[in-house]
Amino acid sequence: MSSSTALPKSLPMVCAELGRRAAQALSDKFPAHPALPIELPLLPASKPEFGDLQVNACLQLAKPLGQKPRELAQLVEAALKTHPAVAKTEIAGPGYVNVHLTDEFVSGCLHELASDPHHGIEQLHRGKSVVVDYSSPNIAKPMHIGHIRSTIIGAALQRIFAAVGYRVIADNHLGDWGTQFGKLIVAYRNWLDEAAFARDPIGELVRLYQKFVTDEKAQADALSLARPAKADDDDEDDAVAEVTPLLAAARAELAKLQKGDPENLALWKRFVTVSLAEFDKTYARLGVAFDTVYGESHFHPRLASLVAELLASGIAEESRGAVICNVDGAPAPLLIRKADGSFLYGTTDLATIEQRVRDYQPERILYVVGTPQQLHFQQVFFVARKMGCRCSLEHISFGSMRFKDKDGNYTTGSTRKGNVPLLDEYLDLATERAAEVARQKSADLSEAELSEVARVVGIGAIKYSDLSRDRQQDIHFDLDKALALDGNTAPYMQYAYARLRSIARKAQAEGFQTADAVTLVEPAERRLGRRLLDYATVVETTARTARPHHLCEYLFDLAGVVSTFYTELPVLKAEPAVRASRLALLALVAKTLRHGLALLGIEVPERM
Ligand code: ARG
Image (cartoon, rainbow, N blue to C red; front, side, top):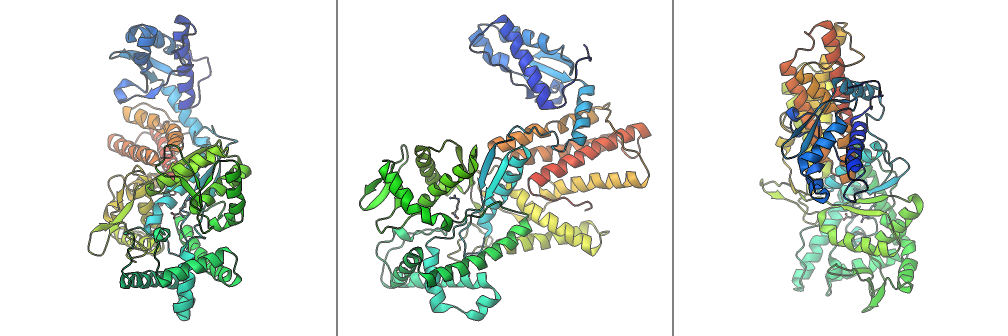
């Protein structure tokens, strides 16, 4: 084994080199065979005793190459074992090649990692842009806990994409032009409580909206009109043919607004302004910042001409007075203009794609929106592709969020029914509960430190309990579980970080040195060092799949590996040279945890 060749500096680099060597070895034997890739995949070993990496491609290649898997594995093994980063190889089972990397290579990578501003993450997507459309609430209603998923997942993806090199454009596509404004205008004119509006504008708008809904329902009942039984707070009134006087009035006000009536426009501006001020406070609490906030209203001026162009190009057609776009494979066409001449949610989405493509030439556009809108995006994406959009359009869907109501039953709630906890109230509640826990656990913290820990842990717990689950799952949100100090929770991760920092402070107070390079001797050290090298790949996978739980799983596992490390090996009590190396290793773990949690939008306390 020679170490004169330069060692690669990261795990992704060594995987690429080994993968090409392995492929080369096979193509030397089977020149230009169509089944052979240019690089064989190197996967993480499934158990520590199998080494660090594994090639399992020989099993799949055996058939097309007409060989026994183990014979191919021998060729691959011979090529890999001479690589300078490789300590040992072996053929296992039906034809796996296990690869053990040298300690020298692993500690060299750790050394690189310590000073790399990108924390080992390859900037593979530099020069490309991605648009993340998230949060995007319908305004003039408060943000309730149901909005939290889009906001939290979207903000995490925004940071994760930036970490792998993308230029990220985070856009809050506000629903600021929907049918709720017709209702609000009617309610505001009839029932406004000026004093209440001055005190708590959003609260008063919500009261007005709810009063409209209740009164309108009472009218419908009195007239025995049927209403679609919808639990969510989407505006379904379009489906209603026979209307109450209140709904008719709301539709008339909406039409006036959309035609530019100055009085209605002024009211609308007022609703938008007070709503945004309220949202911005919540976004600040969550540490969320958008690059652009083009609401649906921004696109209104483009809609008439867009529909005309789609008709002219044959992408759209008239149908019973309305304009629709047929969508192959979908159960229904996309409606882009109603018979009364008004435009729809989907029309706006098409205009939005057009602007995004023109302004940013993105490689991907992601919509972080709940699963119920799947059909909508299927339709919109199909039509956008027909319009010539070549970028990857992705619906980043997520399951529903249920929470306990006053009677302890899980529900998704509804703004209409007024039984949804407001997001802000939930953040308050989590912070208060975190303060109680902190008071019991960390009696030595000052009042100021306690309240900071409570904020970081409370908000972190809400975020992490969402991000740590596959986004497509429905969530039954349980504050007690989210705040538990053990298990895959934010407090556990934050505590793991705070413990590392506490060791570093003690070492500093004693004047102990931290080594420049890590020496890997004991298995627990080797295992921790090796696991740190997976970070870059995990972040890349998380970005590719847009599934933040991959990152959570990794960080949780890393915290587990470090806690085993403590139980097996002394740190502050070790020999000076060993201690210095272990302090360096633990500093790197702390840096990785902090970096990863920051990508998820979760802050860490220095003490807990
Ligand atoms: N405002 C919509 C809602 O609350 C979500 C918008 C998502 N983004 C989009 N471009 N359609 O349901």
